[in-house]
Length: 219
Ligand code: ATP
Ligand code: ATP
Ligand code: MG
Ligand code: MG
Ligand code: MG
Ligand code: MG
Image (cartoon, rainbow, N blue to C red; front, side, top):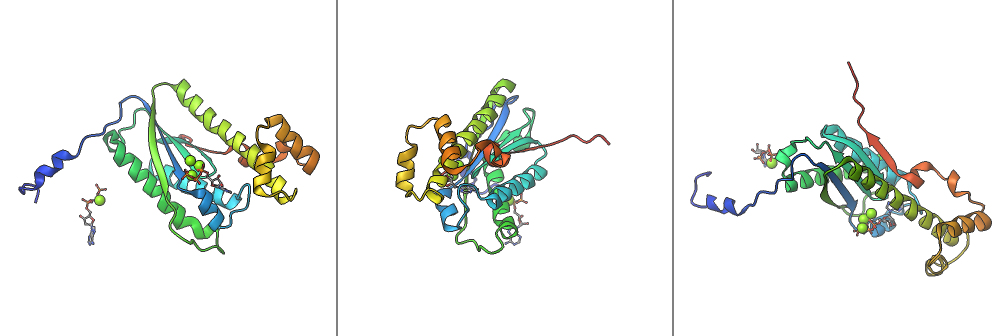
């Protein structure tokens, strides 16, 4: 079939190589997980089972792709750093993004029953994926700092929000209103004075996200 008169259509496929010698940062994020977490009754603000399942799927992906050296996860997202020298799939962007996203997604579904034995999946979850190239190590460091700052900001908000709802008896609308315009300091204060929660003692995984790295073992 390779030489059929139809083969010319192949020429419409455009190459999509990623710039050589740059760090690839691959990030995926759950599609509509606000709804997914609702439908599957995730514990709020942080369902530890869901986070462990994300970590498990990420580890599997890292085991299958040795050029991934570092991963960072929070909420419904995971970031993966690939060596700048990687020649994975000749650095073809859509091949890499689609393969990694689909492997992660199928792992999420495959390992689901280990973490949610009593909660059958109600519908097939999906993730989006993208690659951003970073030319320097400093940028890569700032990238991870950015994601971790995001984890902190979201978690402080969510922790205070759910304390107001679950322990303070506020409606979700009221809780959002209470928190509108508040600074971190004020959220910490609400948590401590109203609910006796010292934010700094909350599980580090919730406050800082999870990190998976590849260690070279000399044999
Ligand atoms: P999008 O499709 O644009 O990503 P989304 O609904 O997934 O939309 P995100 O900004 O990605 O929005 O936020 C993910 C949401 O999933 C969180 O706000 C939270 O409600 C929920 N979620 C994800 N992981 C957990 C978890 N471990 N425990 C509780 N809730 C979670
Ligand atoms: P790549 O990752 O590059 O796609 P591949 O092994 O998937 O590698 P393909 O060119 O996509 O290679 O070919 C898929 C192969 O899967 C077929 O050559 C065939 O061996 C096998 N295969 C797929 N579907 C079936 C099927 N329904 N019955 C039997 N074999 C199948
Ligand atoms: Mg989003
Ligand atoms: Mg999402
Ligand atoms: Mg998200
Ligand atoms: Mg194939």
